[in-house]
Length: 154
Image 1 (cartoon, rainbow, N blue to C red):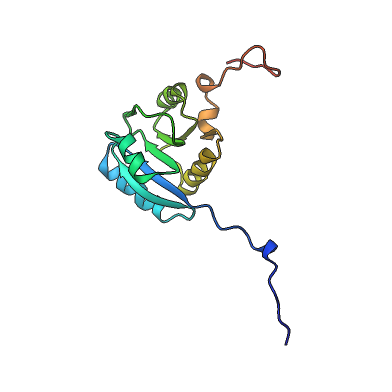
Image 2 (cartoon, rainbow, N blue to C red):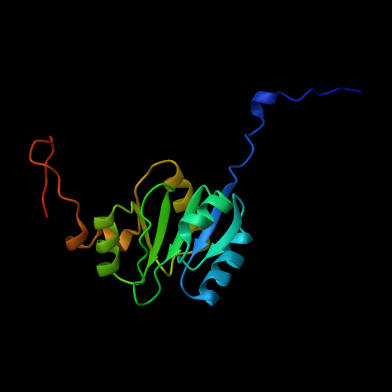
C-alpha cells in the first residue's frame, strides 16, 4: 500500500469570498440581483440598500464592494468613494456621468452573473472594469494628459 502525502503547494488557495452590498432604488431589482449573485461562487451578499442611508449601511454590513444598479432611469446616488463600486447602467450617458463622478467599474445591466462577479473582483483589486460595448463608444474614451507618452485624445 502506498501512502500519498499531498503537497500543500499544489493546493489552490481558498476562493476569494467578497462581501457584497447590493444597491438599487427598486426593491425587485435588489432582490433579483441578491438572489442571482447569492448563487455565484466568490460572493456573499451581506445586505441590500436603496441608497437612502448608504453610509450607515456600509458601516453596518462592512462590504468589500458595492454593486449599484442605476435602473433604466439612471438613478444616481451621492456615495462615490470609500468602497469599490461596480455600477450597472442602461446606457452610455449614465456610464459617462458615473465615470465623471469617479466610478471606475461600469457594466451594462444585461451583464451575465459571471461577468458581474469578475467585475466585482477586479474592482476590489483597484482595476478599471468596463463593458466592451461602452469602451467602443467615442464619447467615453478617456483623455490623457498631453505630457504622458503614447498620448491620444478623443
